[in-house]
Image 1 (cartoon, rainbow, N blue to C red):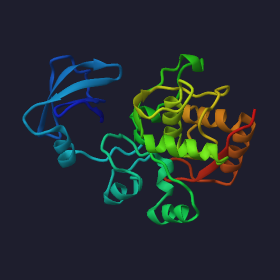
Image 2: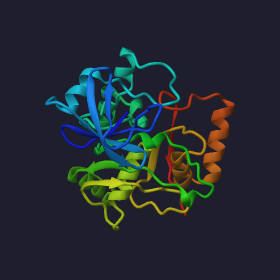
Image 3: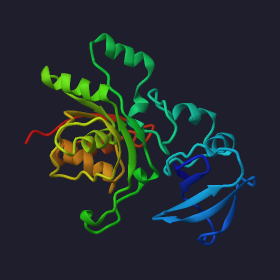
Length: 263
C-alpha cells in the first residue's frame, strides 16, 4: 500500500512479501509494474518505479482503493464513491478523514444559509491512523506522521469567529490535529507541515471548541484524543451508551458532537 508519493517515480509504501525485501531488490506489482527497493524508513519501504510513466498515472490505472482493515470486502464501485468526502480536492491521502463522510453539498449549503462560515484544511491521512497503541505506557507510543496544509483564509476565518465570540467547530480528529499542530507556537499559523502530535488527556487545546467525530476503536490514539477533548467520564459514558444501543462504529458508522471540556 502506497503511503506517500515522494516524486514522479518514488514512493513510500507498505510491502507484503514472504521475505522482507532488501535494498536493491526488484519487485513486480500487479504483474505489470517493476519497482526497485531503495531502502527502508521505519515500517515503510522506499520504492522507485521503473520506466517513464509517472507514479500517479500508474496508481490510477492499476491501483485499488485501500479500505480500512476492519472492512473485510474488496473495494468496489460503490466504495469508490462512498469512501470519499465531499471536500476532497488533492491526491495524497491513504484513508478518508471519515468524519467528513457525514456531509454532502446539500448540507454544506444549509450551513452556509445559516451563516456558518466554512474553512478548509488539506489532510494527507496516513495508514498509521488505524494503528492501535501497543506500548505498555502511552508515552512510549511512536505516533505516525501526516502532512497537512492550513491556508490563510482558514486562519482568518477562525480569528474572526473567535473575535466575534463564535465557536470553532472541527470536523474530524485529523483536522483537529492539523489545527493544533499549526498553533503549536501559540497563535494559529498558515502553512504546510508534518504532524506527529499525540494528544492525550491533559493536553491544552488552543483552537477547537467543538469536535464532530466518529466512534473510534479501543486502544486507538483517536479514542485518547476525544477523551482529552471531551473528558474521560463523559466519553466513557458516551461509548457505553453507544455499545448498549448498538451504534454503528468505524468509517461508515455513527458520529457524535463533542463540546470541549471546560477546565
